[in-house]
Image (cartoon, rainbow, N blue to C red; front, top):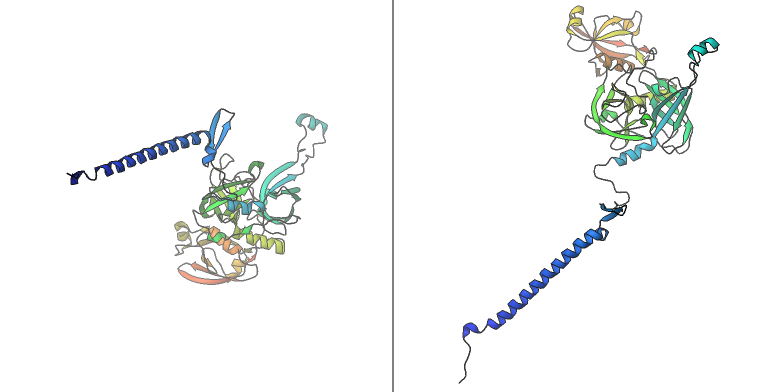
Length: 407
C-alpha cells in the first residue's frame, strides 16, 4: 500500500534549506563588515595618507594629521588675495633723507665742549607711494617728501630708483614723484564716488619699515571734513589698520582698484586705533593731472570770510535763511566784492552744487577755474538772488604739520 505525505509537511525541507543559506549569508556579511571596519581603523591610525590624510611625525614621538594640499592656484572662499595680488606690485616704499642742519655756533669749541655736536645727523623719513602710470608717476603724501634732499623708491620686486618731485599740493597733502625704470606696474584707478559705508577695503603700505603689509577693513564713513588735517578735506574713513609708514600707500577695493591714498590716523599712542583717513582717488586724480600738465594745482578764490550759519548769526545780520554759509567778511576789491557780495549774505549754492557748510563752499570755490565766472545763489535778508562771480587764483596756504599724519 503506497502512502503520501500530508499536504502541510510537503514544503518544510525546502524552507529549512533556504533559511540555512540566508543565515550563513548574513553571518558572512557581518563578518566581512567587521573585518573592513577593523582594517579601516588600523589604516587610519597607522597609514592615514592612504585614505587622503597626511600624517607627520614630530620628532618621531607625536603623529599629527595635516589637511591635504590644495590645488595650485586655488583661492579660499572669501579670500581677498586676488585684490592684494593685483594692486601690491604698484605700491612702493619711500625712504627720504634730509641733510644735517648745522648750528652757526657748532664750530665754536666751547659750544661743542658743553653741548656736543648739534644737528650733525641727517634726518630720515619713511612712507609709501602708489605707481599710477607705467611712465613712472607716483602718488604719495606731501608730508612724506616735504623738505627731502634725497628720495629713494623701493618697488615690491626689490628694484630701487631715485625719486624726483614733480609737484606738491600742501592743501590736500598730496605729491607727485617720478622714477625712471622699465616695465613698471601701475595700479588701476577706481571710482571713489561709488564707495559706500560698509564696503570692504584693503590698506597696503610699509608700516614701521617692516616691509609691504596688507590690512583689511571696511569703509567706516565718507566725506569726513573739519578735522584740521588739510585745507581741503573729504576723507574716506576706514578701520583697516594704518600705521606710521603707511602714509601715501594705497586704499583699494575688493577688485584691487585704487580708491584712496592713506594719509592720517586718529591715535593717542601713535599706533592704529581703527580710525584711519584716506584722500579719495577722485581728488588725487585731479591733483595728479594738474601737476603733470601745469606743474602746480590751480584753484579758485573769491576773497570772503565764511561761517557756518547759526541762529545767532542769522539774527545778527537779519537774514531769513535756514541753510547755507553766511559771509561775515568780504575782502575789499576781491572777486566777491567786485561781484556785489556783501557781509550778511548767505551762499546757498555754487553752480549746481548746494552749499551746507564752510568746507563745502571752500571745496566748490576751489574747483572753479580762475578767470571763468560762475553763478552763485544767495539770500540777502528775505530776498533770494543770483550773482555771477569771477574767481581769482587762490593764494598758497601756509604749510601745516598736524599730529595724526603717519610718516
